[in-house]
Length: 173
Image (cartoon, rainbow, N blue to C red):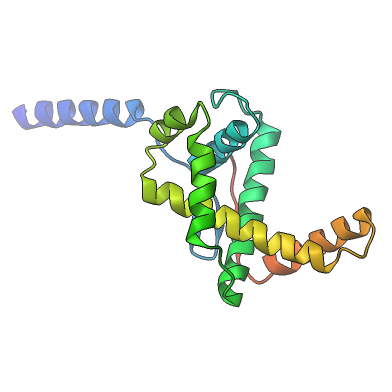
């Protein structure tokens, strides 16, 4: 009888712990073996807000979260393409861009909120710059076309690059 009481108490405590648990992170997409988390969407939104002089505390609507996820996927595909072709950016260029971010009023709050180390932030900035370079090079090669034609070619190119990878998109909280 005593054993049943103890077991019942343990089950009740365990149940309360499970019900009281908070989801800390959510996977929202996957490209090959690389996962994307909800925090990355929010982090990207905050970085974009900093770049545009908007508070990093600004609420992000669901449709914008979906657009940001798509941007992260495209950026990662472009980065993979750059890596495959040996395209990089100079450490000096990365340092310059990091200095720009660090000059934003919300940078310290942003870095603390996402617990970013200097190395982690450097990797994020480097990947962004490399993806931007690959994209810019493609647009320059197609510069003889009208803006609408360039946009169409870029979208087709993105689709082509995405097909080289296994991409899964899950729900965004």
